[in-house]
Length: 432
Ligand SMILES: *[C@@H]1O[C@H](CO)[C@@H](O)[C@H](O)[C@H]1NC(C)=O
Ligand SMILES: *[C@@H]1O[C@H](CO)[C@@H](O)[C@H](O)[C@H]1NC(C)=O
Ligand SMILES: *[C@@H]1O[C@H](CO)[C@@H](O)[C@H](O)[C@H]1NC(C)=O
Image 1: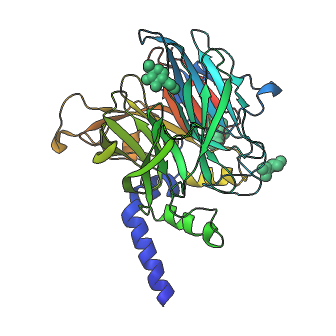
Image 2 (image 1 turned 90 degrees about the vertical axis):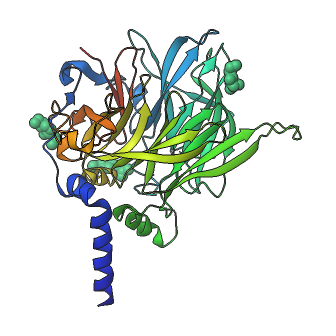
Image 3 (image 1 turned 60 degrees about the vertical axis):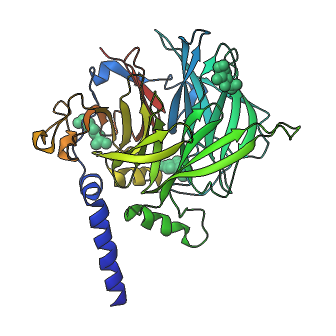
């Protein structure tokens, strides 16, 4: 009887918190097209970012995150834009978020691709001074822009075997494929770091996706899953800053860690708007993106709204024009099955979220929107007065599998997508 009661409570909480998400991303699988690209024809516009059959790119697969690296002139104009990707070809043997935890040894990799009229082939980034025996399983990453030829700081979330750390490298724009290891950041507050958003070359926000992690003995198989399934609001955002320490001759900075926002179910991707005023955070299990107003003086955050997504969102990024690109997984059981190495592909979806140009009231809202998309977002997420949501990319998994991040280069309109378990690693779609 007691168990029956508990079961009912669990089910009740589940339906109350995640009913819409459960219905649209777990219980039903929509008939997504092979590939849909909003700005052109999928077959002729989208292609892998690296040659598919060349063994030199064998490790460029299962890419969780990507970021632009802008190299600026003295005047602050954009001189070169690179794309940096975080990939882990060993993900099916080591994934601290979804499992399994079998073999942490083979290292993941970072790749650099210089963007231009004709994008160059990617190059693997080589590490200098990286500690031997220290695992490398990259997830979220971000790099500060380079001004006037100075080096940039690269921060990478690393799901190492004992706990998750954040690795700091410096990269010189004249040798862009060499990352010089600086230090490993760790505090017991890094329970489950997932994604980072820089607030300066030496400070950043970081999301922690779960309070209970798979690394926990005995309960690690059960509690994180319950936390996800119930959509429990146990994820959070912290702000980390490294400050010069004049008293330390070794040059080790003073490390500060402050909690910025609590109570986010499965806090996943995080992004800072180009003007620095807004922070967006993806809540995967609630199927929403939260918006926060940021106080630049002390990096405190105040929640100002949220927008429901038609899928479980993963990583998010503002493009140069201020649109938030949200990417994720429209069918959760499919990606769980791919993570368990039982099936090959799972569907993909990316949308652009933009503030509405005119102020609407709830009454003026049309429930139908996103009408161009094969499966409209309006079938799965209610419209909101604050923002518009429009599909940029959609696939049943055959065209592109397990999309986790999409970045849009507003100069060219090109869309770069990575896939958590995509054999091709990443694709680019060029507007026709
Ligand atoms: C995706 O759609 C195409 C075209 O309808 C089909 O051939 C393919 O089998 C589908 N893939 C999956 C994983 O359903
Ligand atoms: C995944 O399954 C394939 C066979 O379907 C197997 O060759 C491969 O070793 C498996 N990978 C892992 C990491 O278990
Ligand atoms: C590079 O120079 C810019 C502008 O002077 C400065 O804001 C930034 O902190 C420098 N970056 C690093 C990593 O020193």
